[in-house]
Image (cartoon, rainbow, N blue to C red):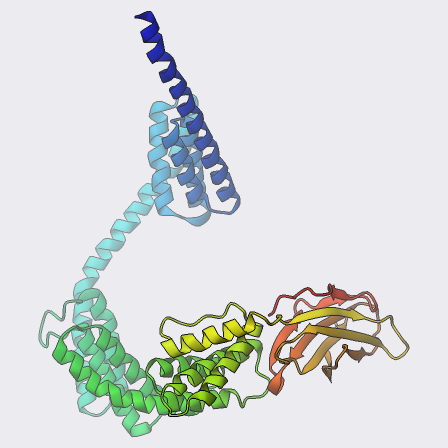
Length: 470
């Protein structure tokens, strides 16, 4: 029987020791995480980690550390939730922790009055909000009445503003509709604002009220599920969207034009999208972000177009070519979820074709020793599979003088650009590799963080190393 009892007790003791060791390890890990969070300026999160450690192995020192961290969250960030938690833990420590009772009492005397003040402020604010509701409802009814009257006397600008202000109030105080006649719902106020802005557009043909009308109708459309209402709003929205497309297709430039093309592609409006893409590719010296976005849209548009013509080969080739150029600059390029099967197929063809091609690589950027006529900055392109790089531009300055620029076409075996000597030996450079239409393909350094060194000592890239493309 003794042997049997020992056989049961010893494994249980060993298991208990293993469990204690695991819990101590967990406490250590949580404490280290808490300390790191404190260093990162996240005291409330640190307090939570200390409490998690206490849950693994109850030790009142962990609760004190948590209360201290929560107190710091209030001191530095005025986090009321953390202040409330600090007070709860400090009250627990005053009752249970003999060692730290006096420290906990001191902290409690500091933080509890602050918590009482904040809670009273919160109650006062809630009371104020409740008292304000009748006033807000009255103001809401007044705005609806004003908007209706303004619309009736053709003051459509004022009517639109009144209805939009009424909608903002209705969302807060009457989300289920005005309690008194005309019992309008928030989406109906948006519809009224859209109607008013549409009237402004009819008179002025200015794009701003047209955009506001479309935005109001779209929000109204999202605010109701009633089939009759949806049909009514759509009937009014559709022609205005056509008008807005025409305005934006004519006016959009830069990255805003790229966003417009994305919207046009989603609605399968290919002729309008093509008009904007042509303008994008006619622009001179686009920056890298705009050039990359233009390539992506050109590829998507050509792929979509190929599915709508009798002889799609040319469009498919254009799509694959644009994808290859994009993948050369951004190998991880992907498609949005709205892309169709043809777009995905052209991207896959381009990806397979690029597997055997080397990415763009710069062999070496270096400068010669200073000569009487200046310093020769030399750049060698080790790999450019699609011959995208056409020219090299060097912006330079000495110390804090004004920037100057030199430029030359890319040459086989390397391109050199002569930079004149300056008043001192500290040379700062920004190197830009330019493509078609002087598009910025690769930028090495920036005006704020240029490549820097003494003439003859600049060697920023080792042979065969691909620099970060910016």
